Length: 403
Image 1: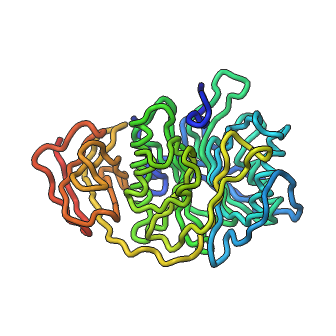
Image 2: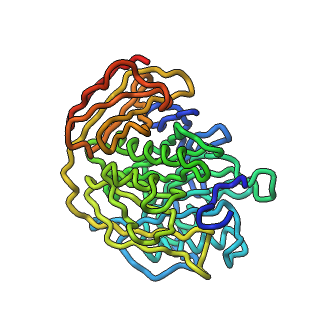
Image 3: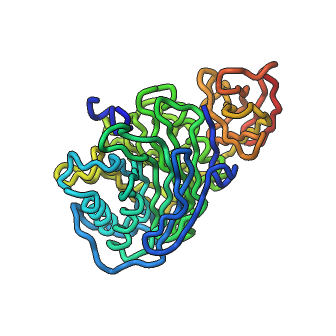
């Protein structure tokens, strides 16, 4: 099938950097009720928009009981949800407007400040990210900022065909929305989308992900890439949250890539068959205090449940940061990766490194507690020549490899 919905719970190489660092994807912002910003086409890119006005009426829908404090100084509440594109099957809703109103009601009831979305689709006359932003503004009487990045065409050749992407909706203002096109791709093009929250929302950088479903090696590589890239982008605070459809369960290598890099699993133990997850790095000054599945049974708005998480202020862990920078130009449509002898590194599978500027690639981890050895590779296949490079925990190191 052409879409990328949950195929684990239902039967059924290019590398583009975050725009904030590389300037590659188009990033735009606009204001005004329902404004859509700079659009993304099939070539990719990020669109961002906010509304300068909101209404006081509250939408109705299949939400759940109230729980406050979404953006209070004591904590943050968020929702991760795969929208199942623009499809209504499996729900009681006759229109997307109705189901988006139900999502908005839950956001208002739970005082949710951030939504990480997957399979947020658009087609002529319907743009999920814009429709849901409008519903949120009506239900919460607050302004929201939306960001969206195109991934691929879903349900191609069927009446449900639409442009599919990942999105973020943030109450108030967010900044620096940016796309990461994964270095390792499967059958369908995959991207991650990140944005930085306001100081009132603790300045966290939140990433929405939707990893490869069919090809295990690609899915695991995408997870390692995001787990490391989020740390490059948030050092030295490491105030990073990653949420979305991992297309893999707790305990899998895809899932384990995050705890190995110092992330706390907010939904640990919630559902052994669940493939939607929320991670926060252990250095961040928040900790999960409540997590649950929402939109279940008759209240379903998608073929996935939503994952609701509440974080409260807490001391972050004191961590030791190790950074490796590789100065290399692998050429267009190629990437640099890192392998090593000490966990979280391994000799068997590499971490795609983060291109920070043309010709430089970075890897950051907080989990190397001893000296180690490493090498870098092109496309995780062509090894750096010469002996292993000695590495020191807690140091910034630069290597200029030959291949």
